[in-house]
Image 1 (cartoon, rainbow, N blue to C red):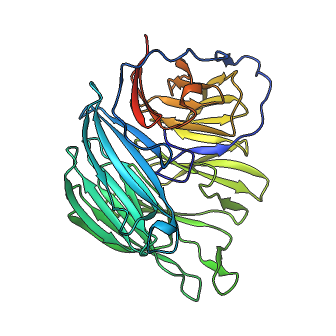
Image 2: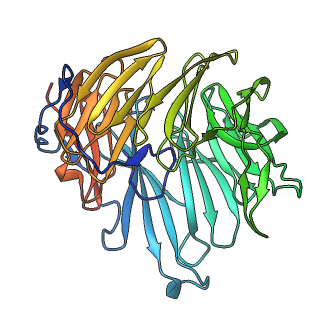
Image 3: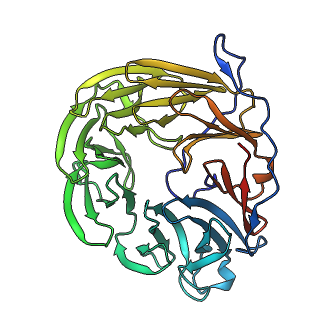
Length: 411
């Protein structure tokens, strides 16, 4: 689980402020989750709670490690740079004992500090830190599971970095629009050792890079004023494989507006390359559009406008007004009402062992994403202060009061 603040990568959240009565025929979750047990271990202090906070906790099964990403605010009075910024650290712990293995801070207090960052975690325990720094530079660092810096690379300011399905890295750097409104993006693909695999200048802006697919919006831009542009109507997408080979192009009707990801994920990629895109129709209803791996439009389905969506291996889940609904491509397969009220943010995420994690006002639900059966319901009240945790296989790792805590949940 990641903080709801704007740090880290791929937080799947949306503001959902309403609740609704139960749906006839739908399964119902328990009103409150079980209380957390006594901790199995509590680590040594990781951060000073008066100065810093934990923004992300991640469990990596292949190395039996737990990573904590912590961020300390730096006031401009303590630095020669004029703006406030952050000191950021990644600390690794042995998941069995809680012993600290290593820690890395990406700058010291007398040097440049970050103004934004994102982190990516590989299945082998490697960690990629993408930092934008107060000297207006941006860097990508690769750390091994033992904390050694494998390599680092300066990247263009404003770039975004993605971890693809084959665990290669994609760096996306959007170019300034041409005066005609045409836009292009330079994409660079690296392997885990930092070796350049390919680099291309693609038409459009990058919408998504997930699994085996890279999706570009090739729509021209319309100038609003001297410094601002907006997309024109009739969006066109171009879809590429992870090795930058173009698969297909599709032009939507002018009534379709592809939505941004400000309210959570708007593009889902399934294991076989099936693509789901979210759009609005003439500003009235939301639809998901499904494309086969080869690019055939399969269908368009209306979804509630306030939905949060989540990708399963061969389908998807929607959340709206306490109702979860699971779909395969050919239709609905399961539905469940969660009795707990939503908080300001409802978050749907993939837990670190592949289950569906739904965070409500009082309860953290862990569900089977295929049939929405509740695997576990745990009270999240004790997690609220720091609110950075990871669930994996009946174990919860959480940041609490400056330390990391392990809870072994009963079967």
